[in-house]
Image (cartoon, rainbow, N blue to C red):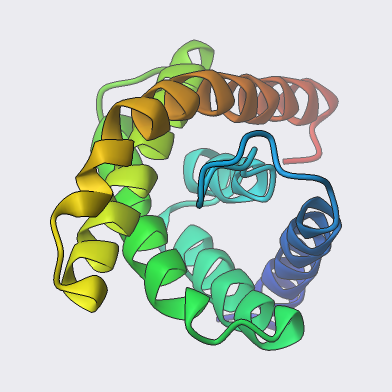
Length: 166
């Protein structure tokens, strides 16, 4: 990795972490554990489509690890890793078939995969299938929030490509 690439990825990680920390201060969208906008994922989705899988994965892992440390929620690390990695995998697979005008689709399926990964982690941690009662609500919220973050990443991708900055 070149110094320029490491610096760029570190800057994008810091941006994603800042977005994550600001979002953590916002009131909950609904009284459902795990339901949030996921705005930091804009950076990850953009990086995956623009910079490639390795850079996006490093940004994602850096944000998850530092976010857990800075937020003081180390138990949340398990849920964030499970959700983030499943989201990354699904988005990576979709990247092969989607165009730059369809990034929002990856955002939707990535958000639903993230919620599914968190439910899998919760099932293993709590040793209970009861958490799956949240699944329909979390998937619905994933569709809405994923569409928003995916559209934001798509817009960012288009604007930076147009300006020659990506």
